[in-house]
Image 1 (cartoon, rainbow, N blue to C red):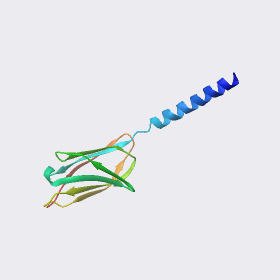
Image 2 (cartoon, helix red, strand yellow):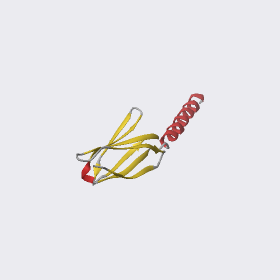
Image 3 (cartoon, helix red, strand yellow):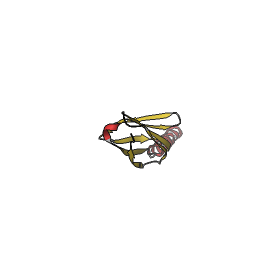
Image 4 (cartoon, rainbow, N blue to C red):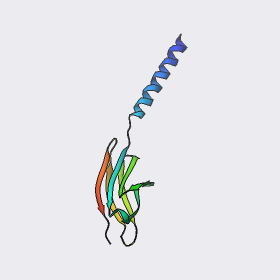
Length: 105
């Protein structure tokens, strides 16, 4: 009987721990690059983490992003110049919209 109680207690503690970690949500980053034909690649960098996003008509979305501060690098096609957006804060469970990034020639 004592062993069954200990087993039940261990399972209960593990279940609570799993639910606690399951409630941690990741954030996201979204934005748009204009002109759309000028963008080649969009990258988000935070420390050693580097994320790449798909681009659709200039729009990009990074999902499942860890909480932190990111730098967004936009690699451009010629004749446009690369662009950078620094200090993009990502919080748990929210998507940070950085708006429009206009590429210069």
